[in-house]
Length: 255
Length: 354
Image 1 (tube, each protein chain N blue to C red):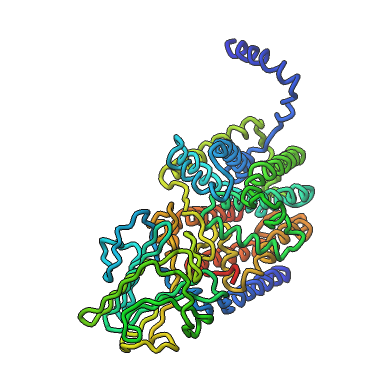
Image 2: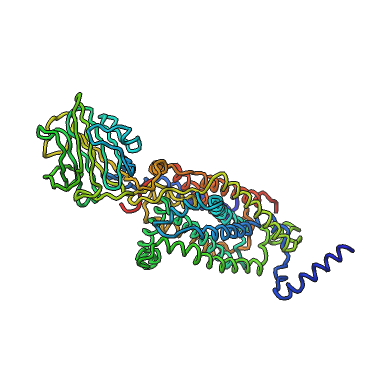
C-alpha cells in the first residue's frame, strides 16, 4: 500500500471514529421536567348542541367516546365535551370521596379548580384556586363564575359528579385549539376533604379543546405522531439506491 | 429525393426563425456518454422544476396564504377543486423527486470530479441551486399550514432569533401586520423562482461554455474513445425529454396512489411532528444537542461543498484514485443516513420554546 493510500485510509478511519463518538454521545434532555410537558392528552370534543343532562352520572350517549379518560389504577374515569360557551365533564370515582378538576390557561397565573363531592359533610361543588400546581394547596374560593351547573351523587360507594363549566371565567380562559394544562385529583378514601391539601391522587393531564373544524381521527393521528412515512421512505431509498448505482457505475469501469 | 424535399421544407421553415432567434447557438455537440442517465440527472431535475412551476401556478389560483385560511384552502383544493388533489399530489411528489434528483446529480458531479478546473464556479452555482431547492422545499412545507408546517416554521423562527439582524427577514416583526406565512408564500412563488431562474441560466450557460465534463477515466488520456463520439444537442434534449416523461409518469402514479398529506390546522404549544425527510438528519442532531445546533449543522455541509473544488485541486478525476475525498463523501452520506434513520425510529421530541 502506498504512503498516500495509507494516509487516505487513516483519514477515513479518523472520520469514522469521530462519527462513532458523535453518535454515542447521550441525547440532550427534553423539557420533561415540567409537570405537563409529557402529560397524557385528554380530548375535549366539540358538539354544537350537546344532549348532556347535568344529573351526576355521565353516559356514553351524552358524551360519546371521543373525550374519555380512564385512570387504570384507580378506575376513576372522565368524560369531556364542549360547546361554544361551556365545557361538560362527567367524573366517576369508584370509591367514596371527592373529585377535583383543575384547568389553567396561564400557569403563571395559577390554576383554577372545581372540587366536587362530600365537602364538610355536604355534597357540593366549590371553586378553588392554587398558585403552585406542583404542590397543590387550595386557597379560598374566588367565586370565579366557572361553575354554570353541577351535580354530584354517591351511590353504592361510588361518586358520580357532573359539571358544566364556563370556557371563560376568572379561573381560566379556554380557547378552542388550546392544549390546556389539566389536573384531575381525587381522594378515594377520606369522606371529608382535608381543606389544606389536595387528595392522595393527582393526575397532570393536557386537555385538547377541539376546534369546530377539527376532525377527531386527524387530531388523534396528530397526537399519536401517526404520520405517513411513505414519502420519506421512497425518497431516502431512491437516494441510497441512486448513490450506490452512481458509485458502482463509475468505479467498476476500467480506465 | 423525398428526404431532400422534406429537408428543404424544414429548412425553409426553420432558417428564418433561426436567423432571428439564434437558436443554432444551442446546436452544439454533446459527447455520447452525456446521454446516459447519470449525465442527464441535471436535465431531469430541470424537467421536475418545469412540472413544479406548472402545477404550482395552478395551485396558487386556489391557495389562500393567510394563517386563518391556508389549511382550509388546501383542503378545498383537495376536496372541491376539480383534479385539485391530483394537481397537489403531482406538485408534492415532483418536489420529492426533484430533491432526490438534485442529490443524485450532485453525487454524479462529485464522483466524476466535474467541479475541477475550469468548472469551479459552476460547481458553486450548483451548490447555490441545491440551497435554493431546499429553500423551496422548506417554504412549500410551511405553506400547507398544518402541525408539521407550523413546527417547521417555529424552528425557523428560533434559528432566525439566533442569527439576530441576519435573521430579521424571518422575524414576525419584519413586516408588522403581514403574517410570516404570507411572506413565505411570496418567497416561494416570487423571490425563489427569480433566483432559481437566474442561477439556472448561469448553470446552463457554463455547461454550454465548458461543455459536458469529461469522463473520469479519460482524463490524462486513459480510456480511449468514448469522448470521441459526439451526438447533436437535440439527441441530448430527446433523452432528457424521455427521462422527464418517465419522471412525470412516476409522479403521476405516486400522486394517484398516495395523495399529498395534509394535517389539521396547527395547534400552538405542542411539538408532536418530525420534520420532512430532507431535514430528518438535522432532527437527529437536534435531539442529541438541542435546537441551537441546527444552524451550524446546516451550514457545515454547504461550507464543505463550497470549499471542495479549492481543496481537491489535483488533476486526478478517477474516483478510484481520489480515495480520501470519495471516502469522506461516503462517510458524510453514511452520517446523514444514520442520523435520518435514528430520527425515523425515535419518538418525536419537543425542542422549541421550553
